[in-house]
Length: 132
Image (cartoon, rainbow, N blue to C red; front, side):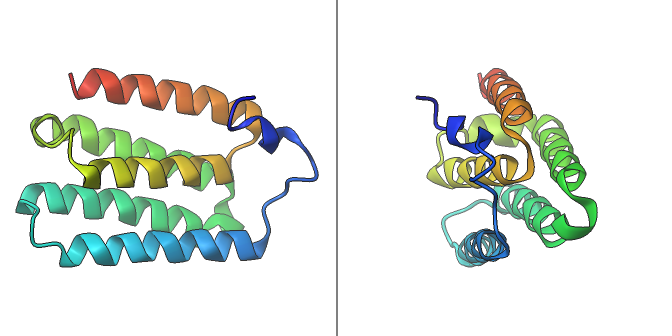
């Protein structure tokens, strides 16, 4: 069973509580990154920008719905491509993995199962190409 298969069920609708929990986890990640002393300034700024895009998408979810998540994903992908050298230099960083995992949770929250699988597949593939 694929880890996203359970999202196809109409019984598995995300609640306001789920949204609030996800926002809290994104805020906690932002605070951890901001206070980290082991990150180069340009990498830290990139991570914070990515997390801010996720936080904004979640905060505006009730207004913009999944399109806000799509916009956040586009913003993140753009930042990754613009800052390709920073991404490649830090691709093995656990911080990078944590932000990537947070992005996956937001994408899963914001899209229906079919679209999510397509987006995740494309996002993951592009990310692998970027960090080579």
